[in-house]
Structures are given as structure tokens and as C-alpha cells.
Image (tube, rainbow, N blue to C red; front, side, top):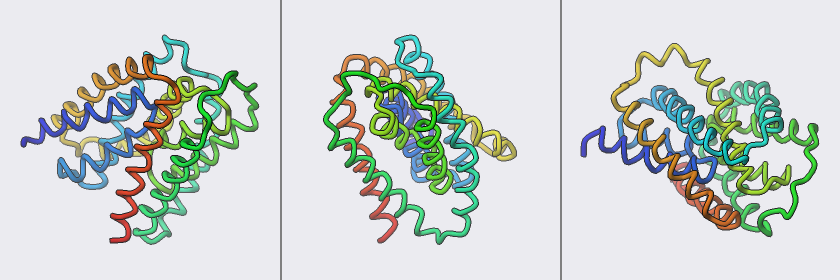
Length: 248
């Protein structure tokens, strides 16, 4: 199968995940670029950021039109994580390489179990406390810096479980967090952009953007509890794969 066909197929799946679930793009994009399309880890990380920025920004506009984005909290959440993410990246450089996938798997599994045990959507949105939003964003930024992922797969559980958003609003707001964080990270990787295979990245991103629109429509039709369960099960699958890959 040609690289362009693989890129389109992978992009469609990742866009669907981002549009419907508000996360999973960076978790899926980087492995797809490495294992399916032969990118180096550095190129895959940069290419993944390009893809996730375009896809999450597209999905964000659709969710915003539906009124499912909490802008002030999302921006505070993202801003609070910038400094801890930088510190986390420094810490990650001193850790054994095999420890990172295992840590990623554990964090993803804990987040998934928490969502599965949740009783579903909140009947009412809690009053947003800036301190809670900043603390949750800082914690997410630290984990993101250590594990080297965009953070959407952790942002959704945090927005639901810590800050009390309904699932649809957590999905929309997480896309704002993903977009801001990915743009910041991409700015630090500007020197590697010219090394990308842009025909593959463009095909991947185009399919992801289209998939994100379908994902947003899916999110508008599905029950919040159903989305929450699907997201949690996807996290468990990613966690199992990563943990097995780390220990075998």
C-alpha cells in the first residue's frame, strides 16, 4: 500500500477521534507516522504537531459554533501548563528511554478507569474556580512535558472529573487546549519543519480535517455518557499497547 493511501487512512481515523472525543490525535499520529510511514521520531513528532494543530483547530471552530467551548477556562488551563511542560521536558531527558512508554501507559490507564467509574454527565456545570483550572492545567502540562504528547487524552478526563464540565463541553474545550499547546510546541520545532515529506503530511492532515468534521457530527448525536465510555475504552487500548511495547 502506498504511503499516500496509508496517510489518508490514518488521518481519517485520527481526525474522527479528535472531532468526536477531543483527544487521541497526538497519541495516534506519531506512531502512525513512525510505524506506517517510516518517519524518524523527530520528523514524526514535528509532523504530528502540524497535523494535530490543523485538525484540532478545525474541530474547535465547529464545537465553538455549537456553544461547547469554555473559552476563559480553556485558555487559563492551557496557559498554566506552559511552564510545567518545559520543566517536564527537562526531567524527561534524564529518564531511561523505556520508562517513558510505561509511564504513559499507566497515566492513560488511570485516566480511563476514572472516566469509566464516573456516573456520567453532570446535571449542572460547576462554577469555574480559576485556582482549580490553573492547578489542573499545570499538572497536565507537567505530564505532557514528561511524556511528550499533546495532552488531549488527559485534558478531557481532567475537564470532566476535576472541573465538572459536561462531556460535550469538555471535548470542545480540550480542543482549545490542544491547539494552544501544539502551536507552542511547534514553534520550538521550527528548525525541523523543512525536513518533512510534505506530500505525506498534507495528505494526512487533509484526511484528518475531513474526519474531524464527521467526528463533530458524531459528538452532536451521541449521548455524553456514550462518548465518555468510548473515549475511556480507547485510552485503555492505547495504554495496553504502550505497556506491552515497553516491557517486551
